[in-house]
Length: 198
Image 1 (cartoon, one colour):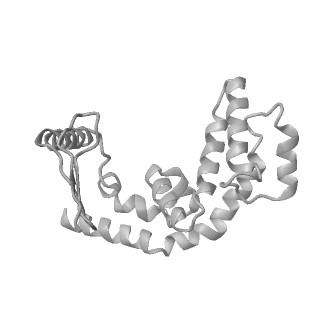
Image 2 (cartoon, one colour):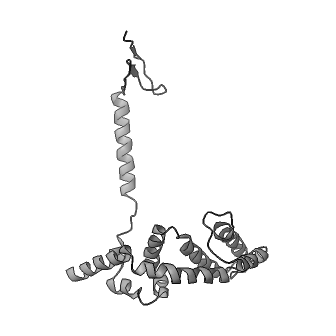
Image 3 (spheres, one colour):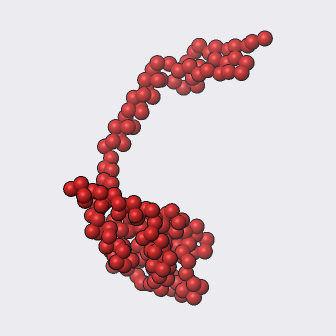
């Protein structure tokens, strides 16, 4: 025997009416509710469209600058676009924490306030040095112990040795793979095509 229940009373605080048969349920919503949903969606869309979306990297980069990255790893690090593209590559290798750590150390070395040095050093330690961190960088035990013993009164250069080891790792392993990666080669091709068009 087919049973059906039809809920006719509907308010904003009640769930939408439900019509149920043996194996099928159909949800009926009022025109007002559908209109509110559509208006809400349009509102969200317009808000998103007003956000400042950065232009594609090809519009902020020249072929000459991208080609300069082949000269040395330091050329990549000196270029904001180079760092951005290199981080994107590192993400594909699940090692972007190396660059994040290196950049955090650079920022720490520019800090003048001792209070801020202490605060940022502890954050860097928890994010990248602690063995409990999911973003732990690869450094040797001696350097880790040295950091541990200096953490109570850290200087802006507390992570210098660790930063040097992470730099060497990226320079030796990641940088050559970056230059031969489809990501970098395809960027060069796109920039070359843009140069020819102009």
